[in-house]
Length: 418
Ligand SMILES: Nc1nc2c(ncn2[C@@H]2O[C@H](COP(=O)(O)OP(=O)(O)OP(=O)(O)O)[C@@H](O)[C@H]2O)c(=O)[nH]1
Ligand SMILES: [Mg+2]
Image 1 (cartoon, rainbow, N blue to C red):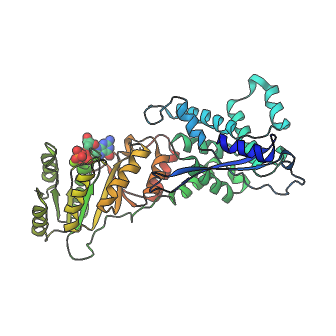
Image 2: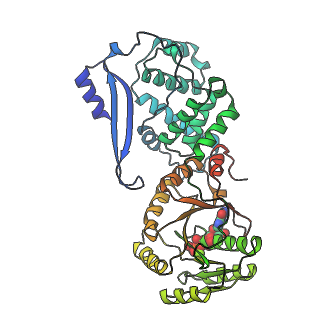
Image 3: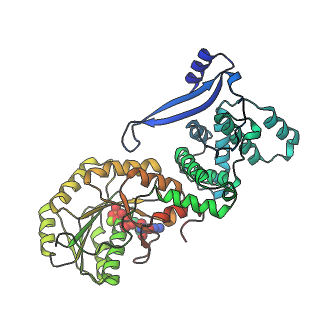
């Protein structure tokens, strides 16, 4: 960024004004290995003031800088490891916003600067940030301060909430720009209206499978579903919950197979669930045994396959899993991911397990999650449809078929799953 600013000053003179900074990620897969490109829009100082006031102000456009997150991290706070309350997280985000806004080199406008400083100690810190946001907005839109529409309190708070939940600045800004451009000015001050519009908008980001349990196989074979994923995310528990839903709610003939002969007691764990639910359960110790077992279960309606948890870094074992599943060609392979993992871990898990051939994503442990904004974004970037969400340890109750608005609602309900 410094280099870019110096280049602008060299070309346009030392009093050049930076109108807009934009950092975009380019290249890579699932956002990984991508590069950050920095774009600056600048002009000479005498070009900044508009000649004529626009008659009807446009809705504000919120843009941010990637350096905000850098400043946040440099503050010594690791957002993924610090168990903070909602208010404390919002406070961190405010400080991030201040760093971000100071970094964007906005020319000082007397009307904006003198009033707050005269009020001195009475000035709310939040107003300071809001003032900075508005200054950025009017500079971007070539307006004088008088022409800048205020950032509605609700919109501003929601923007901060999204950042506090580790939503990227890009997604938060896009979502709120979409909301501000579709709502009338009087709706923008209606908290409920703004929240509903944001839920609706975020829901469009989340690919979701048909909200009901798939009940018939498309090809006459038993409907075959395999659960794969990292260690300890809840695969076996989720297999038991889905088996119970098919058996107890739909009266289907269900069978379970486990491929996990790796972890001590893994077989026993699934066997206990199978006995409680009242379904047959088999262990497959080799590829051939798996094919034979599937053959022997051909009179069932549904076969659920549990697999051993694998680190996303263990590419050999993930490749082995692929070759086992390839030969039986399940109708659906569900990648099971824990909502408690960080954004980067989730994206790397999705990338590595994609070689198995993922059809659906299950998010588990939603009851323990805190960063729902991040989950919306990660789900969007993974691009596979969400099938189930799990919300606790209890079998069979703590599972729900995914709905588009569920995660979006959780983003706005800081209290989490109820
Ligand atoms: N809080 C919470 N805990 C869950 C949820 N789902 C599973 N668990 C717990 O997570 C732990 C691991 O669950 P498992 O089902 O054994 O996980 P797994 O992915 O099969 O683990 P491995 O087979 O060892 O890879 C258990 O204590 C479960 O009770 C959930 O939705 N919420
Ligand atoms: Mg397991």
